[in-house]
Image (cartoon, rainbow, N blue to C red; front, side, top):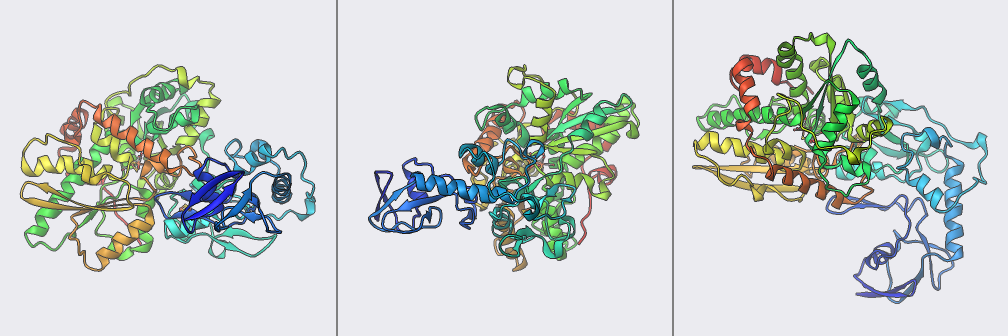
Length: 578
Ligand code: HC0
Ligand code: SF4
C-alpha cells in the first residue's frame, strides 16, 4: 500500500496504481484524450501519447503524464496548477495545428473528444497552425467504416482495440512523428484486409478519424419516393440504447417511442427484427437438435459444436481466421437477413407489392450489419442498414420531440415477437433463447423457469452445462473476438469441453455494446445497463419462447411448411466461404 496526496487529499492506493487511478478513487477528474479503460475487457489503452493528462509532481522538474506514472510512496501531486493548465492548452494547440478545421460538418461533431477538450480549455486560436504543414492522407470510404487519417491524433485506441481485444490486427501505427497515422497493411481498404467490420475501432476513436459510413440520405430518398413501400426493422439492442441520444439514463427502454418515431418518419411498415430472431431460433434450434441426433447415432456428416452465425463480424472473423472449420457454424442466416428475405417474399406476396418496389431498411446497433447487407449472396434483401446513432440523428433532423412521443406498437405480422428474441441483443442471449426452445422440443415437457442464470454474466468466456432431460448440453459463450479465438483454439485442439453449441458475439457485451450504438465514452457499465434493460423487457413479455410466437407459427403454416424445409433452406439459410 502506498500513500499519495492529490490536490491536498490523502489517498491510499495499491502497488502499481497510476496517478490517474488514484485520482479516480477520490473523484478527481484528470482530463484524458488517449487513455481508455473498458473494465472487464482487455481494453486498456495507455499509450501516454496525447499528454493532456499531465500533472505536477513535487520534486520533479518535468510534468508527468498521470495515466502512465506509477504512484510512489509519499508522492504529492497537483492536477490543475497554472503550469499544468498552460501545458494542456499547448498540447491541444499542437494537436490542432495538424488537424482539419471542418468541425461544423464533421460526422463526429458533438461527440468528439478533441473538440470537447478544445472547448473545455477555451482554445481560441491554433497558434502553430501553418497551412502548408498539415499532413494529408487519402480518405477511405468503406461499406461500413470511413477512415479519414487527417483527423487521427495517434492515440492508438483503435489499434489497441483491434489487436488486443479483437485479436484481428487490421490496424497499426505507421511512421513516426509528424506524418504518423494508424493504417492498414499496404494501405489497403479495410474490406481487403483481415478487418471484420466490427466497428469497435470506431466506438473508441475520440475524433472523426474513424466513423461509420452514414446512409441517412439514402433512407430519406427512399422515404420520399412514392413508388416505394419502405419497411423498417429494428434490432433488439437498439431499444435499450437509443434513449441515451435523447438524454435518457443508460438502460432506459424506448421500444414504444422508437416505434412511434419510425412511424412519424414515414416508414410504411414498422417491424421488429425480433420477429426474425424467433425465426432464427426455429431454424437454428432445429439444426442443433438435428446435429446432436445425428452425431449421437454415429453419423459423421455433421459437426458439433454448432456455432451461432448471427453476428456478421464473427462470421467475417471465422471465414478469414478459421477457414478450415466452415462446417461448424449454423447455416441459418442472421435475423437481419432472415427478416429481409421474409419481407421480400412472404410479406411482399401478402401485400401484393413486387420485390422491386419494396425497400427494407434496418436499424442496427452494429456497423458490420452494413457490410452484411451488402454481401452479394444476400441480393439486397436488406437495402440499407442504419446504426442506432444514425437513427437518432434522423429523428433529430425530422424535428421529432422524441421524449414526448407516445408508446406505440410495432405493425403486424412481422412486428410480433417473444422475450427470447429480445435477449438476442446481449451476450448469452441467443443461446439462452435456443435452449428454451430446444428444451421443450427435446423433452416434450413444459419449461417452467425460462431464465438460465448459468448462461448470463459478463465474463469474456463462459462455460455451462444445462440438463435437458437425459442430455447434458454443454455450452460455450464468448463475447469479444479475442475471447472467441480462445474457444476456437480449444475446438482445434479437439473440443476438450465437449461443447454442443457455442455462441459468439464480436463486441464486448454483445450487440448492446455494438459499434453503432451511442458512444459510451469508455464506461462499460453503460453496456451492462443496456443488457439489464433487455432482460427486463424479456421478463415483461407475455410469451417468452420463440416456438410460441403465433405470427411465426402462422407463417410456417402458410409459407415455409416447417423449419429446415426446402423453402426455408432456400430463403433462410446461407453458406460460408474462405
Ligand atoms: Fe444483434 Fe442480431 S442480436 S446480431 O447482436 O442474432 O446487430 O441487437 O440485430 O441480425 O436479432 C446486432 C442486436 C441483431 C441479428 C438479432 C442476431
Ligand atoms: Fe479492427 Fe473491428 Fe476496426 Fe476492423 S472494424 S479495424 S476488425 S476494430
